Image (cartoon, rainbow, N blue to C red; front, side, top):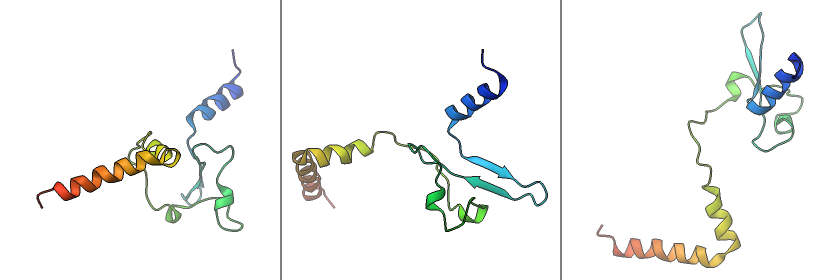
Length: 99
């Protein structure tokens, strides 16, 4: 069995959720982000000397995801004939459309 602290760390590692720090005196929320497949956090992407993101830095939020869409780009890069077939098929659809 894992002890309390080790169990909590293991659970946090599985979540992969961004870290949030709330200041009790002002009610402000600071966020530390982490990329999907990055080992560390995203602080190297923040401004010089900036350690946290505040609410006004956050521009939007994800509402869903498409996990395998990027494979199309990878396949077209590795096998250019697929790219030409896809462009040809799209061109054929444009030419044969009724509008």
